[in-house]
Length: 253
Image (cartoon, rainbow, N blue to C red; front, side, top):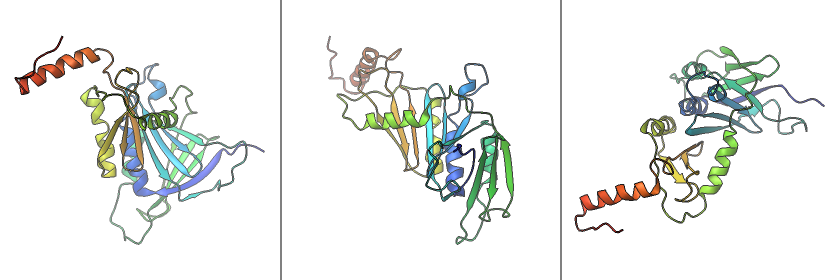
């Protein structure tokens, strides 16, 4: 038996648009050698789910879409695995714009068929739900998956597992405002608040935070509380605020 190298999946138009827009903001900018691996948005055609992922030095983003249909069915060959499609970041706004909503009858299912052909290095998006004119399609080429691209699915899963544990003390979230702003796109696309939870403990400088938005989006973001803004610096800043807001508070030590 040989592994499947071509498949067609069907997903909801709205879900696809939201996923692409929410994740796109997190791709790493620039094409220098050290940025090439993360200068992409990865589609993972898994069993029953389409994952859309991106990452940079400070954050990861992962959106999931339940498949309406998959030509591979539910019984995969033993050699089969998820098909990976690494798209250039500049293609994502074009695809998202192409699937932008248009007034259609509410009883019409808006679906997009995505055909990934690994051997050709092409991915096709086809309107099959009457969004524009049925049968309209766009095709983009893609390069072989870059092995240096982080395992965003694995990172998200481990972070979510860690965040379910109890922390010994509240951990501060220290990060540049521009990084935090990246997640505002997900909040807008999914119409839900961001839920941010800490992984690890306050003394664990290497752990970060999990960012969730509704049932379909999960991301991670690093915190810089362990370096320039270490715990001692944080405590000093906290005390200065407490003394300012509550003059009766006295510094200890």
